[in-house]
Image 1: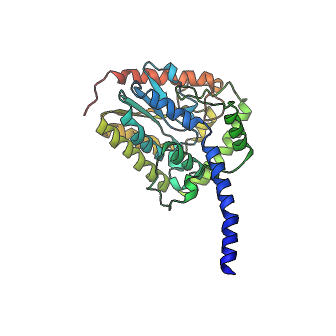
Image 2: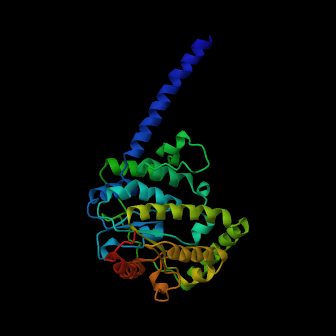
Image 3: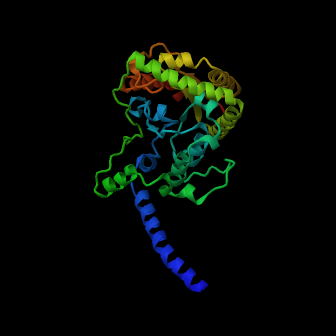
Length: 320
């Protein structure tokens, strides 16, 4: 009797497993920003001199076409500082002409530096598409960590599968990895309201304590430095520009932690640089799509300003 019950259960389970595996295959087969950017990065691996890494402020803020040397934007929405050394270790060796790496850093790294606090979906995408393991995160790996299906069978995923198989896939990223942010430009009142919402979030994080998250962030910053020093690659940390109300908001301790620490690092290490755009008064409301993201106009300004800074580094000898 028990054998028959077990057999019936197996007969029922196998089709379900096959269906789920088929759905996983369909989801993984969809080209997206991760797969497209990885493909384009490797296609241009012999010529890339400058690699841009970071979150949406880099992905949607720095246009490789506006730099004076061959540049690729490998930034992604939701990328945190602990992901940067993993990305550097994974791909820098294959970039034969690489001279400079830019990494985004800001107050978020003080408040959200704990890898365990990052959304599982972000980690899953890096594991699936970039083949990166986060072994130092204090959490046992689960099968779901490697399944795209675990992100959910929502309408967006189903629509993406349909678009892919009907040759209508829309990739946001350009061939150089950049995603133009658009023309959006909120009113002063909208900026102020958004800043107020963020202020509450920041105050909550400050009450929780910044030291744990920030100490985690420092560890990953120093991992990036160690790798680049070994490879004789110049490493530039950048804090992206921010709208006025956000700049006022960032008078909190999290911002000072980051700026003080990064300034000290540039004195401690050769060929490590820090460029803070936060208080650059040349960025006005007209340059922003929200309080922390530039729009197309702001991205052009951000890119040109950073390029001018990097131009001074490009031909300078690396100090081993």
